Length: 352
Image (spheres, rainbow, N blue to C red):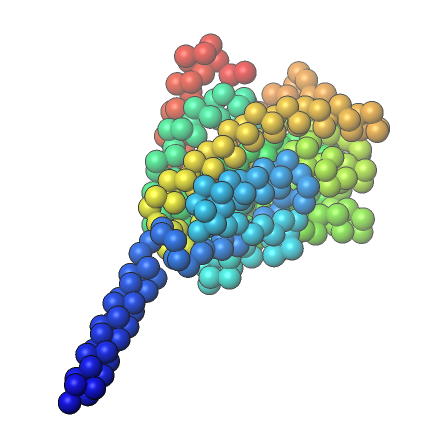
C-alpha cells in the first residue's frame, strides 16, 4: 500500500504544480504593461517624404517608444504615400489595416470637418497667432476626434503654404487663369473655388507630379520645404509671394489600438509625441525659410504681391471664410477660432 499512497501523493503534487503554473501564465498573459505581455506594433502611414525632417522625427519617436516601454510598443512607419492618399489612410485606420497616421488637415477634416478651420485662406498670418488659437481649440478638437474613434497624439507642423505656378502670378486674377491642384474628395471646397472664378482640378496628392508633367495642373499650394524636398518646384519655377495658410497636421491613432496599450505606457508614448511636436515647431519654420533660398539659387522666382493686389487677395480670402462658415467649418468652431485669433492680435498689436 505504501508505494500506491506515495504515487497518489506525487500525482496530487504534480497536479497542484500544474494548476499553479497555469494560473501564473494566465496572470502574466492578461496583466498589462508587464514582462510577457503581447507587444503592440503600431503601423503608421503618412504622405511625408522618406528621409524628410518629418520622417526622421517620427522614426526617432518610434525608437523612443520602444526604449521607454521596453519594446511593449513599437512603431512601423510607411512614408511617402505608399499606403495611399490621406483619405485612404483614414479609411484603412477605420477598418483596422492601420493603427495610426500622420496627416494634414485634409485627412483630419475627413474625420471631422472642424479641422477645415485651418484650411481657410489667410485666416492666420503668423505662427504665434496659430499656436495661440490652436491651444484654445485643442480640447474641442480632441473631443470631436474622440467621438469619431480617434486619439490625437500630437500636432504636426508642415510649414507655411504658398502657391507655386508655372507662369508668374502676383494677383488673384492671374491665379484664376491657372489650373490649380485641389485635393480630391472635397467636392464642396472644389465648388467654392469654382464659384470664385478659379479652375480647381481635383487630384490625389500622390498625383501632383504626374499632373504637372501632363499639363493637367500648372499651379498648386504647398510649403517651400515640401516643394524643394519633392522637387515639384522644377515644374513650377514661380512662387506667389503671399502666404496662404499654415500646413497643420496631426498624429492620430485609433481608439481601439490606443486602448490596447497599458496606461503607464500611454504616458510614455505621449511624452515621445510631445518631443516630436516641439521639434517640428522649431525645425520646420527654419527649414521652410532655408528652402526658399535654396530654390531661388536654382531659379525659383518669388513674385511679390503688393498694393491693390494684396488687398484683393485678402478680400478674396474673406469671401472664402464666409463661404466655409457652417458648411465646411462648424460655425461654433469658426467663431471660437476667430475670437481667439483676434484676441491674440489685440494683445500683440495686430496681425503680423
